[in-house]
Image (tube, rainbow, N blue to C red; front, side, top):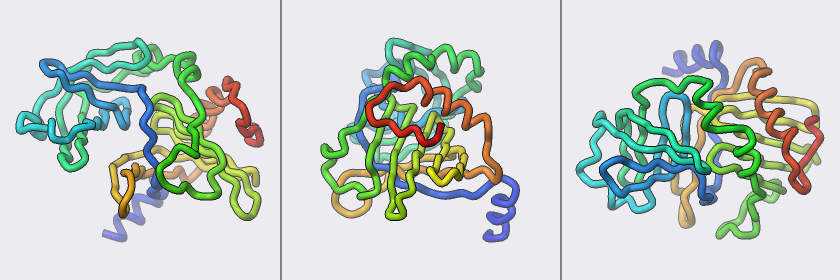
Length: 234
């Protein structure tokens, strides 16, 4: 098994996991047909999505793996009909994994998630509002509605790091001029001791930096007009 993992890493990249505190923001939602149930979309790709139901007790026996699911995806006034199959159910955390009946075309994706709407949704997260202590190295955190995260760190060596997640693309900029790119391959809820749930994301890091990921994310960052946003990566 270890040899198989190392072989995959050799050709596909290095898999790493990161923990992210949850911060509830209104944004991307899925309303099921024939039901009053509305779910928050935790993770979205061209092929599927992960849904979270705030009240897990509402995940009744009607929800079965491999059963069909239909509904409306909603984001900032935009709507899109979705059909697919349930691939995973976690009743303890109220989570559902969905595989779409067909892949989203690039044009559909760009029309639904326009750059202007994305940028207008990005706001700074007030770190002091968290009910638990965040790492001292974390200085700033910005978030868009379900599709964008930017975390600004300064470590003990005075190195600045800007980690940006746009959809499933991840780029880490360093003031030491190093740059890493990755693709988020999954995200699950975890509970570590007393306190709120965390999101554990798995990233597959590229062996060589992916210029397309960098350009997509820089295109968004160059349009931001946020107070105290770092500029060392430009």
